[in-house]
Length: 421
Ligand SMILES: C[S@@+](CC[C@H](N)C(=O)[O-])C[C@H]1O[C@@H](n2cnc3c(N)ncnc32)[C@H](O)[C@@H]1O
Image (tube, rainbow, N blue to C red; front, side, top):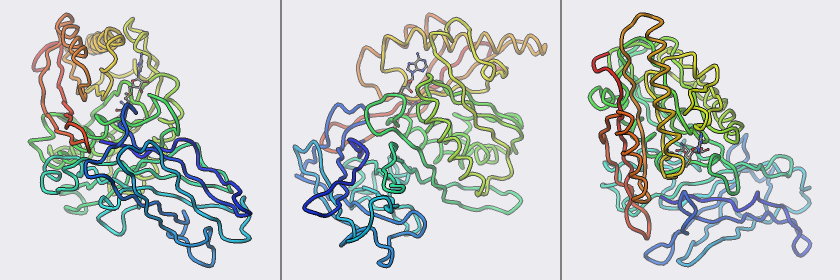
């Protein structure tokens, strides 16, 4: 999968006496280790501008001179593209309030009502990809960003379109389109970007959430509360998607949730982005049809070097977690001992909770998603064996990549402790 990324916040520059918006962007993999290299020479892109309040900008309040959408070609061998838009004559820089979206022409949103920069998450799943020759080549993640009073935001936004099926509830069966928005930093950062395994696993869980058989294997909800802890959450794509689909996943399993929690954790550097994405999701969910379930989404810092020693913050410590989830956190072999040690310390914490409640032995379950990048990552399995974790692949999702070999996202279920508890 490839991502459209701004190289720096867009700028308003003066060129031959006119004000021009300069948008410098690239298209790379999640790791940024290779540029998009289309097999048949080029890919057509659209850069579109809208008034955030009123949709496509209207001539009366036009920000730009000329067209509101421009086509560009990303050609094999390119590393950067500079898109330029001339401001309407006489418009002052500080009055520029608009939103830009950059997306591949052939991947434009299928529904006119969907936001321009949205990627429908079904478009990364094999059962959709196999029927569509464009998607079979590989997906490019669009990017959206805003100017407010002439200044470009330092974050860009990824919009994931989810189609939620609500089972027989108070209002009967229904389908709903939800657009979850995730801010990520413009510029280099590991914790403040989204990654392939998070996107693909979120897509898979959203798709599976209406199927009792598929969802039971990965999110087995056996009570009227279900608490999920995410490690290395980054911008929060996986945990926030899980919080969104939990009510539907519960209904598919014949349950109605009460007071469930999803807690995102990461290093301190991830906190600001994660918290603002939680706020965005809460605003989206507040207007959606979520079967009245109360799923709280929270954030707390958790460094695995501390987790390994059993040192957890108050939110992590307070709950015997039903499920731990993580995506794209196992590519750095140096951090694997601390990560696996943290998983084991969380199991010990769960044992303490069960002892205190006289509930008998504990079983811990972990959903771990990875896009294997290097054979050295297999060190994970030795560490899991050493600490008595069992593991099996529950899903393998092929991920085509334009101009390069296909990749795969693997979703593992790890377990430790007493069976049948
Ligand atoms: C490749 S990113 C994946 C982010 C996110 N899970 C996703 O799929 O988009 C790896 C994440 O692990 C986090 N991480 C790395 N070392 C960590 C540590 N020692 N303790 C906690 N988090 C860590 C990083 O901050 C980063 O957010």
